[in-house]
Length: 246
Figure (spheres, rainbow, N blue to C red):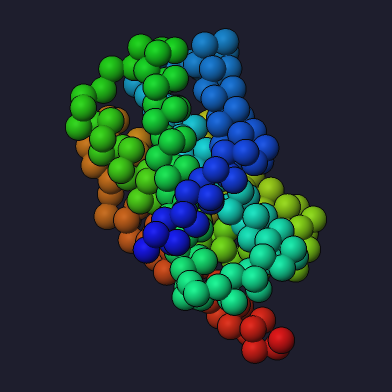
């Protein structure tokens, strides 16, 4: 247990030192949040509701980037450097490598949620109840596992450059079709129709419903965790095939 906790601690430190994390998961979402709520005026009836809505969008955007890109690219880098092979000769069980990755990534996501929520509360004076802050944070933290599962699938790629390019494309497509940058209602019909069958929209919508005083819809839960199950299965299958081929 002590060795496992040390591995988790190392994971957290390594992520915090990773420029991908600092840019994609903190700097970029916070920049977008300030630009679209403080500089550009979005024509909506209730600015306070919009500011809370967009805060949830940018927090979701942050966690998606961290799960897909930071985790996925790091897995490819470590396999290319022989780190994953080295872990197999340690006393730790094989599965502890991935469990430590997920645990470390979860801690990072908690940090991201707290930082972005604090910036939003200070920058725009967003006033939510304690229950809404807690519920939205827990929803986003739990939903981020779906995108970590996407990251583990990206992590099965052989080249870092390929993983970087593919993860960027996946990340941006999910952000656009999920309504992370602009409300889904003003997006073209084709994007709305596609997005409502993809995980990013349901990830964001659960948090949007909470800050409006509601709760995540059943479809949000079913599709988000259905994708989690699918990506875990795909990632596990690909890894087994790769290990069998060695």
